[in-house]
Length: 320
Image (tube, rainbow, N blue to C red; front, side, top):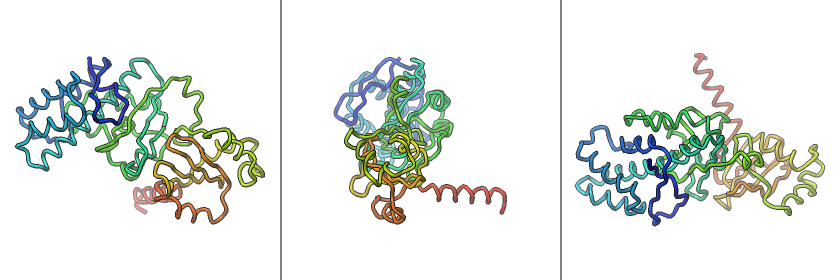
């Protein structure tokens, strides 16, 4: 009962380490290598399974594994080999996260949290999911579908990989989405959370964690005239709850790819760092929307546009 579960790191030079968690997840990973192709020969399949047995024994770093694949399949064309490497990488990343979800189910934990690597390579889907708290019950169906999948098509159906550029802007997750990776090369991971930790968290309308960075920022929001002071809100907490619960626009900060900027429908503007810490929250003037578009590196969530797209889809469905 081994699964790629233990290392919570981006360092590819560390040995892959395993812990005892969920035999079904191991079986699912050994039964297939995703997206290699449905016409793989038994010889190729046996080779891959042998390599993954050695992976489970902790014999390779991530980079050593890719080198092993290159050496074992050197007769492949470059395109085929690249596809094989991408498939192995994706399978290992998925195995790591399946292991964490499997542990959460086994321990009867109620929640997990999604953590992305925030930089200029982060995709919109990973940005939109970063620090999101998810009920284990909401991803249990996907977990079962992934670990029980016997074919590539079943595995594809159990994981929606189409949201990389669009992101996910719904409170309810689709049944085939939630467990990373969300795309090839995805660095996003799952971490387990205790109920005590969750109770202390403040979450925005999409279930993502946020809090004020420090006491000085809190006092600034509380006392500045264009922040809490003079507004209809009785406390900083009420102001933030209303702002983060009614997001109209969201984008990447123009000067720092790890930060995000938000406009609430209550006319307040928020800057948040990579750890979900609020650096500022203040009322924006009428021209702030133009400022937002000019000072965020590409708007990746627009509530008005999302509503318009929904209306267009409904009209098309009705034949109007």
